[in-house]
Each structure stands twice: as structure tokens, then as C-alpha cells.
Image 1 (cartoon, helix red, strand yellow):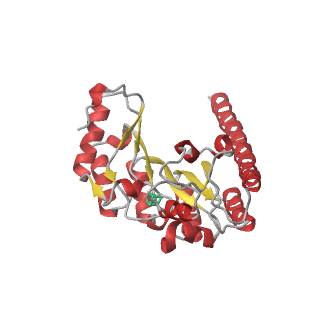
Image 2 (cartoon, helix red, strand yellow):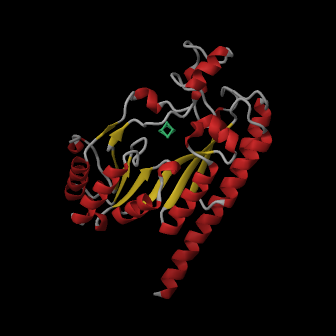
Image 3 (cartoon, protein in one colour):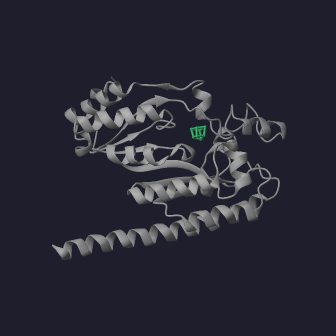
Length: 276
Ligand code: SF4
């Protein structure tokens, strides 16, 4: 068990139930930290949750795994144990998913165990870009379907997207823009492709002389709005200025969505209070 007594545990906390991911997305550094996937048993994971619920004021737990649903059988077992111990009534959960694995039975299991939101790298609304970033293991249709399944189950979807791979055109980026607009995501973030050491994208950037082992590492900071002057631009199609303008376009849309969402949430609170 982690020595949580050394930490300040509040209402929201984290559990690692596994390490690593069986997939190999071109930009992903986390699979370079863990060269194979390792899972805690369902029994152990649930014992950590029990300990948290018993000893701390925990109301929400996020499974910090790279891919919580990588082993489906284990997800079903965790769900069974959580329910049999009544933990689903005491705490809410969030977890990471990959949309090609999100079958209906997994969505039901996630809902039953008390998962309220999932995070996933949806990456792109353009089929070629998605293939470049994640290989042929997931499709735009998988992403669309997963968002729909989660929405139907009342599970919020937090999606992240990546623009600016070497051959990506403005038109392909607009497919992502339209995907975000048309699909009901609780929250979305858009990043510009960043070459982290150890990834295929790093090797590509190195061949082009864009990165080196002695570089200024702050150039890899992922907040493009803050770091756009120093960020490494991998695009062969768009200049830094054009990429910045595209990124701004995404953010204007995202900020507008967040604004509308906040208003809706406030209205819901007001209406609920009046109803009482
Ligand atoms: S699915 Fe997620 S964790 Fe796994 S390799 Fe891709 S980006 Fe990394």
C-alpha cells in the first residue's frame, strides 16, 4: 500500500491500478517509461480503494493508469468487487480509456462501478491523421461511437486532441475542429504535436535536426499558447504563425463551449433551488 499517511489526502485523489499501455502511439512518452504492461490484481486495487474510503475524506478517485481498461476481465472483476463492498455508493470514479476497447459491456461495467467521467486521447477527427498518430488500431468511428455510448450511459467524456503532425493539412485539422463541435464532450483540450525523447516522433524530429540531446528542454512544454515562440514545429505544411492561428481558432471554440457549459450548470443549480 502507498504510504498515504505521509500525504494530505482530500476529497479527490488518485490510484494507480496498472503501469504502462499495450499500444504504441507515435507521440506517447509514457510507454517508454514502462516497457511492458503490469497490472495490480482486482483484489488489491479494491483493497486500496477500501483503505482510502475508510481512512480519508475521499469522495472521488481517478485511476491514474495509462489505460485503465487495457485488461477487460480485470475491469469486470474490479466492478464486481466494488459493488459487492458497496463502494460504488461511497465514492465516484474517473478512468482512462481507449475507444477501440470501449464495447457496450465495458461501458455498462464502468457505469455500474461508479465511473462518472473518462479521459481519452481522441486525437483527431481526420482518418489519416488518426492513423499517423495512433496506428491502425482505432478509427474516427470508434471515437464517435465511444462518445455516444458514454453520453448515453451518463458518463462524461474528457477528450484530448493533437494537431500539427508533419504532413497534416489545414483541411485535416478542420476535421478535428468539426469533430469537437459535433460530438458531446464534457471537456476537450487541443495540443500541438510535441516530440518527447524516446518516441518515434522524437527520432523523426532528430533526423530533421529539430531536436538534440543538448536542447533547451523547456521547448517541449506542451502549452502551445504560452510556448508557441519556442515550441518545436514538426509541420511541413504550416508555418509557426499558421499553426498558432489554427490553435487559436480551436481555443476560441473551446472557450466558448466552456462558457456556455458554465452558464448551463449555473442555470441548472438555480432551477433546482427554485424547484425546492
Ligand atoms: S493509448 Fe494512450 S497511453 Fe497508450 S500509447 Fe496511446 S497515448 Fe499512450
